Length: 182
Image 1 (cartoon, one colour):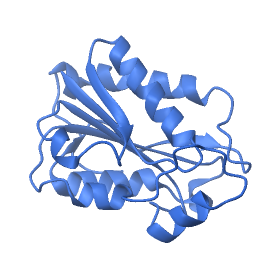
Image 2 (cartoon, helix red, strand yellow):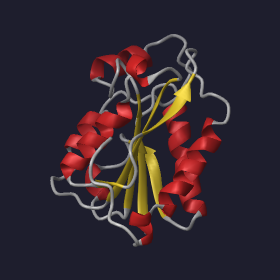
Image 3 (spheres, rainbow, N blue to C red):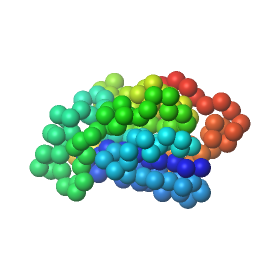
C-alpha cells in the first residue's frame, strides 16, 4: 500500500512527529512518502491507500498565514525549515473533491485540556472528510511544552499510534472505515 505523511511545522515538533509516523509505517512494509506541505503536491496523494496529515495547533485550531508568520519570525524559533506557505488549509483545499482513500489526522499542541488549547487535528480531520477521505481513527494530539519542545516519549507515542493505524480494521479489510470526524 502507498501512504503519504504530510505536515506543516513551525518549530520542528510536528515534522518530528510526522517523520516518526512515516518511519513506523515504513517499518510495517508500506511505501511511504513523507514531508512538508511545501514538498508534496495534493494531486500526488490521490489514489494513496493512506494519507496521514498533521499540523501544529495555533489559536485553538489550524494555522493561518498570520500565525505561521508569527511563529516563523519568533526569535526563539531555531527550526531550519518552518512552513510559511502554503499551509495545511490551502493544501487540503487543493485536494480534488471526491478524493477517496483512508486518512488520519494529528496535531501538536500544548499539554493542557483541549478546551483551553483547541486542536488543529479536529479541523484537519473535518476538512479531509469533506474532500472525500475516510478517517480510520479520530484526530490525535501529541504534546509540546510551553517552550515549544516535544514532551518526553511523544515520538514513541507517535510510532505506537502509527502502528495502531495499520492494525485498524479498515486497513486490514475486516471492518468499514470510520466516516465522521471526532
